[in-house]
Amino acid sequence: MSKSYQDKVVWITGGGSGIGRALVLEFVQQGAAVAVSGRRVDRLDAVVQEVTDRGGQALAVSCDVTDEASVEQAVATVAQHFGRLDVAVANAGFAVTGAIETLSAEDWRRQLDVNVVGAAITARHALPLLRKHSGRMVLISSVAGHISAPRSGAYCASKYAVRAIGQALAAELHGSGVSCTTIYPGYVESEIAQVDNDGVYHPERADKRPQRFMWSVDRAARVMVAAITRRQRDFVFTWHGKFGAWIGRHAPWFAHFVLTRGRK
Image 1 (spheres, rainbow, N blue to C red):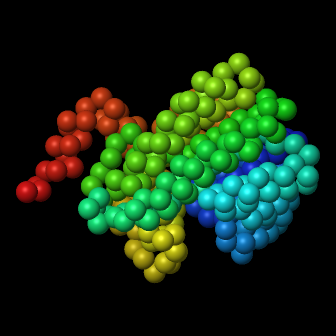
Image 2 (tube, rainbow, N blue to C red):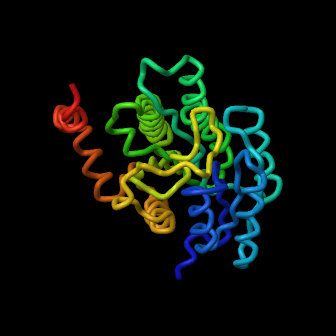
């Protein structure tokens, strides 16, 4: 297998589970050393051990993306340990669910602070290091950044905002040697449906998303890393994700019809 990231360093937030963990393993397989960040240290340590068992190199770096000082310290730790940074992936995020009229201001602040401000601040502090080696900045949005749905307004708003950040950042970085890739996954195996509006994980919760459309995280990680390697500006994946994003952009009237069918 091609070692596209041999001698490169990758930093991934939200790397303790789901897509983040799968990205860690894919980048390691392609030769990278990876810094794994998140709030749950036990999860980070487990991922690092998994990488070590496979003969790779990884470092657990605790980081809360809602705390700018924590993000700044995480970047400093990566720089001190590895001496460089080639790819930064702003993957940390969760979903606040519920009808708009039921969500409090605190629910909204929590959602936007993690998914939007967290991504922007991750980019802010990673970019000085990325500029030194013509690196890659990666933002993880969602197909929900193209089409919104009932009871997902807060989450969709946050992912629309990440899309806006990615578009602005790609233009700001043009000609700098640093690329910005914004990724819009469709349904992918993860714990997102088992995390409540306060960000607390409930392993006993059932994932009510349509399982027949679900991609494995390993498959998702492979196509995501390929898009990052190509320095693709925007990347939507899963066939249903591409269809949903297209409908959201070009036929919102149809999306409204489908989402309200049968509702009085």
